[in-house]
Amino acid sequence: MTATHHTMRKDAPCAEVGVGWRHPHYAELLQRQPALDFLEVHSENFFGDGGAALAVLMQARADYSISLHGVGLSLGSAAGLDPWHLDQLARLVQRVDPVRVSDHACFARGSLGGHTVHGADLLPIPFSDEALDVLCRHVQQVQDRLQRRLLVENLSAYVRWDSADAQDWPETDFLNTLAQRTGCGLLVDVNNVYVNARNAQLAGRADDPVRVCRDWLDAVAPEAVGELHVAGHCHVNDEHGEIVIDDHGSRVSPAVWALHRHALRRFGPVPTLVEWDTDVPALDVLLDEADTARRTGQALWAPVPQGAPA
Image (tube, rainbow, N blue to C red):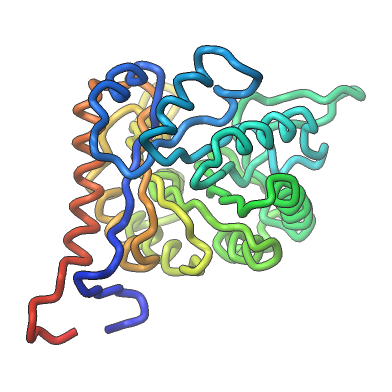
């Protein structure tokens, strides 16, 4: 058995599978209670005391593990963390007791004219020593407040830093070092890796995006990975140019499913989350995508027949 291919016996754990639980599916999922290992929700949608949204979340919490996925901590912002945001997240974590808490390696907040402004987007950070120090400090601050491990997600980015020190670190080394310094985990979004590789190909900076993605996944420290994300993307080619966008608005592409299988071989049976945030389909379509993810894990870790070589 090789170090990166986890051949497992019948008593080995299977990779958990969950879906992003969005408002159009609230009532139907609670009624049908499909066989899912966890539900993931955006933390910011449930901030504040009371209300219908929090009541629905707590109803789901009675039957499912909940993963809280944030989009607003702005962990890479030189302006620092928003104390109110961290307070709200800490209160939500205490209420829900989630199985995982995650956010992104990005920034969204900055200072302009003496005022703090919010970009309302997940903006990339440079992979520099200074940016790494900022990110480590904020991740540690969040973990100290929450008293639990935080997972940090790699970003799909449509602009990149172009300065003397902005590319000091390869992204995977940057993320591995973040995990080593802080003890945080990594949330590997496979679709984000593929989108970035496709856009690099369109820009003439890469030839084979699948090979680029495999190399990226192989460079990530397996012990740091706590969750995988898969999602759909779209390819736009118009008068403004050609680009691939991580829009979470369609089925997972065959290339991303193949990379998801490679990631599971590399990282072992870590949980997989299927995201679908725009043009949200019927619940059965989302559950079918979850079944595809589950079948991948089952095929990788099927019981070894008696007498077969390990």
